[in-house]
Length: 601
Image (cartoon, rainbow, N blue to C red; front, top):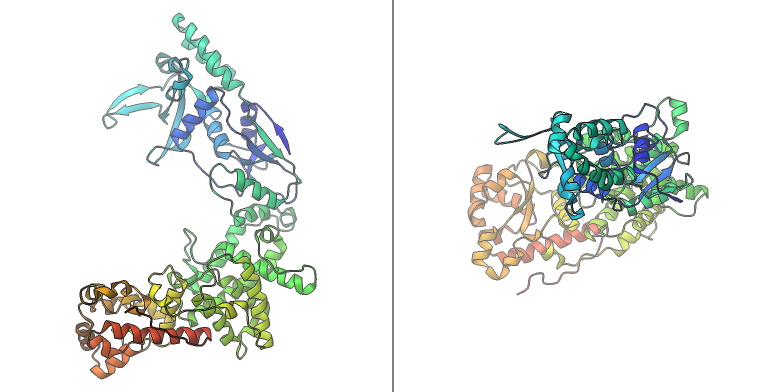
């Protein structure tokens, strides 16, 4: 690592030539107009800009590079340095002080704008405290208008008009010929000479002699060190994503380029994988993309790492299964290409498994992260997951993770343990169960506090009610099926209305939002559920066209004692249903039921 202090002028020349570029994992980020003006003021005062950090190229891995925004670099230009920290500062200064085009930025309302930057000569030679006010921006057409753009209040469209107003254009501050020509026009009025001399001494010379403290990392710096450095010094506040770093690393893989004649495009590959998965199984997210939801690229990479290190452990080349950050950063392109199809197929199997558990929408998924070791297990042992008894053990492990709320904390260690232990449990059939199964617990009073989708157990009980055969109270022809959940807009609905509880059982109002008082029903059914339960039951029975006794059987499929609804007995309803839900939970977890009074008297 070396520290250098090159002139800003030379740094911006390197940006323009492509000698200094960005690693492709850097995100585009646009500073707003106010920050750019403040930055320019800092440079004109020769105040410290802050250290920037770069990486010498030529190391391993080789990151794919791209120019800073606005730089017109010749195709194929090879950089000497990659900019790790300082992108926004140098991009803003390059566009404002070097390129002969307006700067692409945003105004104070966040609206995109293009602007030229000027310095007011008279204000700039005053007190340094007023320097911020001396820097101004004007729109792309170089005019400022007021009165709904009907009146021009500032016209800088020609050099003569710039000089007349005493506003110096900063976009060619490093071009001595253009500065000289502008100066000649400005001092046509001899009275401007003293002002120009002060401006040159107090402003221009500061810019021309401004240096940039730059740390230059050696080309031998490792990938994970680059990532760690980037995250610790990145002034934009946007942490680096492993997927983005691998995108650049894989794109810079020269062996692949030599073999295929093109670089590897990881985002395109992931987009196709996710499109196939989400088209078949909506639980994984949206096929059309947009903000990443459901299954993430990180989930996929972690599953691949679990598979890769498990195989390596079996071969004796590593000592442990792992999917930590360093494992992902060190994932070779060849191994990704080899394992990605198998892991994608494993996630497709996971989608089918979730569908059998009546979990078909992203919003209903208790833990996205729990799918990582499950996909790894499927990728590693394949059809063994379909063997007699295997599906039951996998389901028990899954529901213990969900209802025991085991996947809410630090996960990397649990990922590795579950991958190895679940494989052993499936294969051996012995009584040594995975830690997730052995450690999972569900206390009956937890039912009282399960009130929102923020809890995995809340979503889990909702899914179990559907899985065990709940029939909708309006579409009563058959039990709810996975396809109907989306078609009929099935969601959790209150059984006893909150307003009814508040009025008739005010001391029990805190239990109104509990999962005990909710059940999966269609939107159409919920529209008829107004007033006391005894009233809406009659309405729904008539709408279904069923005999009352048969309709009561339908209501009972939700583990509801119908008599408590008819009688408006919320306390007895709650106690009875809590016991049945606890039995349902314990059956899914393979645990023994222990029930205490779940509602305080």
